[in-house]
Image (cartoon, rainbow, N blue to C red; front, side):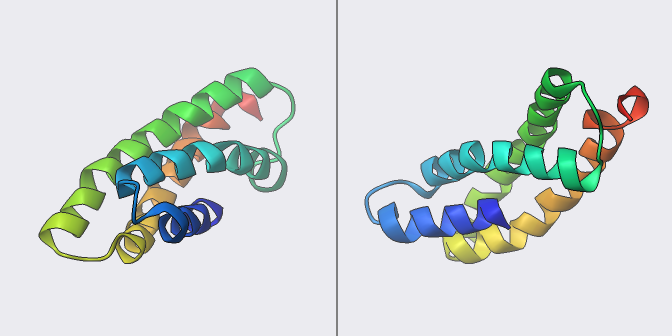
Amino acid sequence: MFGYLVFVGLYFWLGNRTNYLVLLLISNVLSITNAYIGYKLLVFKTRGNYFREYLRFYMVYGAAILINFLLLPIAVEVLKITPPVAQGILMWLTVVVSYIGHKYFSFGGNNR
C-alpha cells in the first residue's frame, strides 16, 4: 500500500510532466526498503542475515516490478485505464507474487 500511495502521490505531483513508468520506477525504489523492514520485523520475524535477505528481497521485487512494467502499459495504453487505477488493480497481483517469493525465497528456508 505504501508503494501504491507513493506512486499516486508522484503521479498527481509530477504526472503531467513525467512519464508514469518513470514514476513507477521511483515509487518502487522508495518503497522497497520500507517493505523490507516491515516484512523482516513484522511478517516473517527472522533474525540476522540482513544483507543476504535484503539482496533476495530485491530479487523478488525485481520479478514483481517486471510484471508491473509489462502489464501497466497494457492497462493504460490498450485498455485506457488511468495510471493510478491501473496501478491499484495491478498492485494486488504484485502483492501476491512478492509475498510468495518472500515467504519461500527471501525469508524462507534456512533464514528462520
